Every structure is written in C-alpha cells, then in structure tokens.
Length: 166
Image (cartoon, rainbow, N blue to C red; front, top):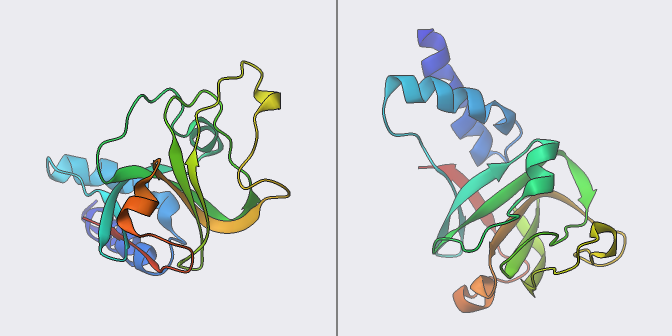
C-alpha cells in the first residue's frame, strides 16, 4: 500500500510532463491520495503565461458528455479530453449551453483552435455541426475553455502546452 501511495503519484506526475501517456491511472491515484490527505492535486495546463485548471474526460462516456448541460465555467478553468493513442476527432456542442473555445493539441503544441463555438440548440444530435469541420484532426488532447478565452488571453495556434499536477 505504501508503494502505491508513493510510486503511483510519481508516475502520474512524470507522465504529465512527458505528454500524458500513463494518465489513465489518475482516478486510482486520486483515490489513494484522498485517503492519505484531504486535498487532491488538480491537473492544470500552462499555455504562455496562462494557467488553466482542468477537469479530465478520458473514458468514452466522459468524452461524449464533456461539458454538456453546464451553464458556466469558472474563470481560468476548463476540461481536457485525453486520447492515448492519438486519435482523429471532431467535437460537437450537443446539449451545451455556453460558448466554448476548443483547443486541439498534438505533441505539446496547439495545432487548431475553434473559437467561440456557439451552443447547439437542435434537439437532433445528428444535425449538430462538428468542430473542426470535415474529417477531423489527429490529436493527443483537446482542451475546452469558455468562449473568447483564447482571444482574451492571446492563445494561438503553434503555442506550447504544458500539463502538470498542482
């Protein structure tokens, strides 16, 4: 048990610094850490000088649900979607009530930003547009933040992305 409490968090921290290859262990690590202490570490991403606190979506169900039904996001917060191995993706806004910026990341760099993607009002998910339009884009991660965040904070395609636990 001691090994699990010491080694697993170290593996997770190292995996974050190396592009999240072992991040699937995070839920177990959080459980182990929560027994040992009352505060759990929060995943964050640093883009330029901006630090964003992240919720994690990594299972197919979490990825599909994303930020559905949310009416707001806290300042400097968002959600990261993890794809290991990298995957060709499109995102939609079905049942989303707030505008979002979608930041598509591959190998530690922003390769595409879809800014101010509007909430989707259709009742038929098959009619939802996808982002980016077309065949999709191969990524390791997608970060969603409040609409307008990227423009306001000067985040652009080509910027480096650094994940950590705090």
